[in-house]
Length: 393
Image (tube, rainbow, N blue to C red):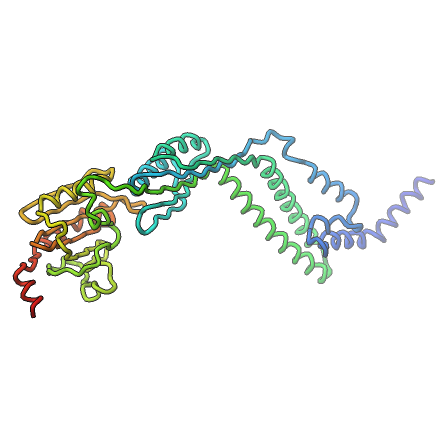
């Protein structure tokens, strides 16, 4: 008889208080702590059932350390090397990076090409070998290495992220059962806030995983200030030539035909434009007339050009001297592309006529070189006598 009365009272109490109890649970789950802004702390209010509290605590205590966690270490290094020339050093560095299946994340080269800075990413398994190979480029001036074990931090972040995802699932379930409009709004606001946290934590987790998978090497090159005894390097304007930008500011004292398909920029060339002719696919032609100083013939300037361009690691594609005309073409690494650079000189008494042609890629070089060469053949430098007459009048 007593057992029957007890069962009846349990059924009666459950029927009277179950709706209110469920509503209180929903409110507790949707409530956010006003002082900390923490969803997890707000959830653990007096309105939360003991079973839910225990479930939550069990989730927090289930640390990934109970499992065999793979060790994750972020390797970073800083390397500063002194080199003879920056551009050849950059090419060697890129070769090392390619060899170890890495990539250049960032590259900066100063205007005078006397220094460069790269951020290199290589698979962590090749970090030591890549660092050793990069240290052989020039002379190491400074080096530092840092290893940061993020195994525990990554595991904790993964666990907290998983907890939030589970809490989101529970909120969605409560939202389905909630009838009160105000409580629905509060739950939806909490879901929106929690979703932002999940996105932020996921982004952080992905970033940590990427940093652990690919080590980081910050590499700096600084060119040594040296004066070569070779006569070619004693000519500043030759040493200063750069394939991808104008270094001779003088205007040309000659004319030559506009190559087929090129655009004419000669009107503004003396004041603003960096090229006199250019093609839609990126070929740039620059021209200048400068003083023949030191006074020399074509054979001298051919040797000077061969020496200066020969300092770069890639072999010269071709050189030619015909009377007072000298031409030379070399490959040149610019950014991530293998560009080509042609220099043509006409020795004309006390002046030199210089033509520079920059081809941005090998494909464009093969396509456009005949068109450009045909135009250069039409060049007719003014003779010394004509320039003298123009100077008088």
